[in-house]
Image 1 (cartoon, rainbow, N blue to C red):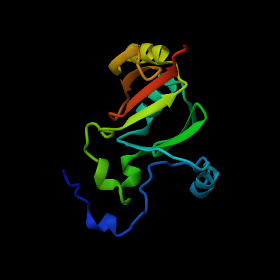
Image 2: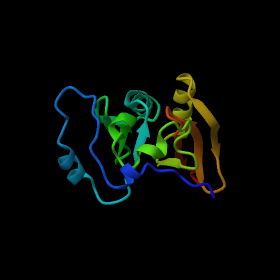
Image 3: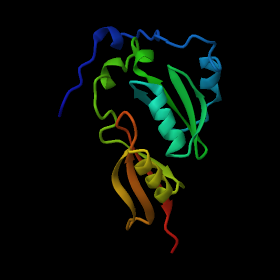
Image 4: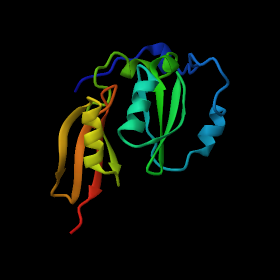
Length: 163
């Protein structure tokens, strides 16, 4: 089993973030945190926010609640997830985990239930994004495809197959 190397300074709990944004934030971080529903949340770390936010909006059909140089809040089919730029995590515990990784989500499938895989595949191809697997009906009752977004995260849009 491979081991991850962490910078001890980060593990000890320093959490000040380095921000590039020059204007007032969209909302205070603590207010956003309190607004999130109970359940599982996803935060994607990327070199730059804009390419993945654009992919989420243009290919996946997401709604961008907010995006700046440091952070984006994205709504997709009723769920909210976050995108943070690497520089915003310079002094965060996760700083050494994702930095310099070509495919940051290795082994992770971000599954999007209730999405149209055929439409998303077409938009991904039109935008010259990687399509790992085209839309196909699977034995587990879903039609799905696999597309790779900027930063190497794999998204799997799917819809149920009508019996």
